[in-house]
Length: 159
Ligand SMILES: [Zn+2]
Picture 1 (cartoon, rainbow, N blue to C red):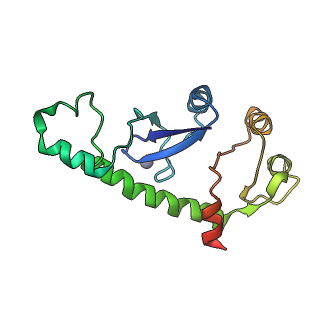
Picture 2: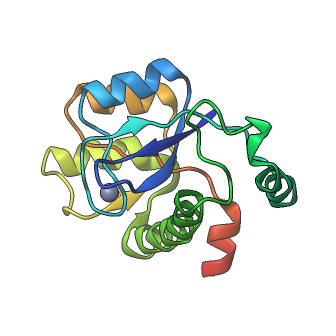
């Protein structure tokens, strides 16, 4: 599982979880990736910057000639990074919303998604577990599936 930093055209930064880089490009090509904050479909992959601790970066700032900020990647304490942390919190909120507004169908996800798509079940938002094969099969049938990261703590907070 890969955690990639993604950004929409409105500079919203969020994390996407993928099996591989290839899976990311596939989803991008199919237009399946949308910003969880504004629904924008123009998603790009951010350069994955190593996460430095704040203490270290403050020391870095004290020596501006050190040259460590070369390469165009944002320093962890710059406004963009702070905004990204704020968005991270918003993202957690968004995830809670998703969980609150969807029905957990567990491992029957693929079955249910197909039934809803074919009109055999009540149209509703569902979430659950699906294997990678099941997910790919659904996508090939034109059924929209958004991969959610497994966040056990999120569930605990809600229950
Ligand atoms: Zn956005």
